[in-house]
Image 1 (tube, rainbow, N blue to C red):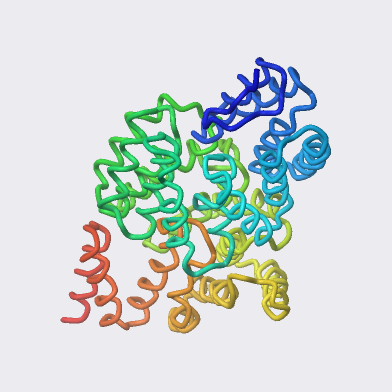
Image 2: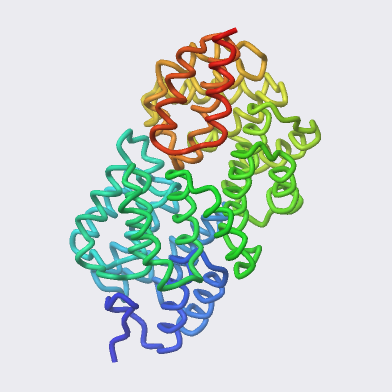
Length: 442
């Protein structure tokens, strides 16, 4: 009997137990649900020569920055698949191995080529998708469109599959097509509610169309079903904290931070934990709410341990927030020097937007609002190149708008706020616009 995955692709294992465990693990991984690592380990225990189970386990190691363990799994999977794997499995393993090794351009090229031949290989299809996927971290300015194009090219292969609907809907939402993206994601969520990526994608759609009350109700009603160890547990509550800030409810946002985002409480992967914590504390401060110094100090210590050296631009930008907020000029200059060296050497695909964000956030924290505006203005259209989602990157635009208002450039602040309010309703932007108008009249 030839075993297959849930998408009908052959699996080179003679063990029914290994195949069952692998299928379970893939579904759990694609849903962002706890238990995937354990399922892949059961698959390996049932068949130690099963390369796809090894590489899948390595991918989960990568999520948690367990680099050595991930690379060992990748090396073993390459050896095993060369001996007993199919052509499809060999390129599957190679693509995931390149991603594990951080070779983003090579992994992306390999993934796109593989999918032309094997579009239903969902594990490979998942690599370019998402806010932390290969497209997002490629440095491309049009990665939102690239995800939509990829999904459109292969949608015929997936039909009404719950995972693909989730990711295709999210891609549409991020690319500005919320009217198509939200109902598509909802269809995937309705098929499998034990799917954190679908709940997350819906929250992004609700963020983009201004449905703050819907988002709050979704989190409140759904989160009890999701264990705190889930990869997106803290991030989903981070979205609820953003909703609280829409209404100026800093106390609720800080309570959410204390419950699930603070380093002593979080169970999130390091990249999620550091970026969620930094961005929420920065928003609180930028919006005019008091943030106790000890919260910044504790989160900064955690972040420095997680990212002691310059890495992907998305992480570096959030490390710049910590350095700016804690007035750690030495840390800022050290990381900025590395970033600028990479830029000069042509090894920073995201380009000059990264060092400019560093300088802008430092200027903002020091009260030099004109300097913040000057640093950001030339690259506002390039912020997308750092990766992440629109909701995450909007922190940069928010900071720019606040800097405009604080520097007295109220006309430009009003113009930006008016444009945002034509895109979606926002209680916060409405308050800011009224404040800018009042000060102008005065």
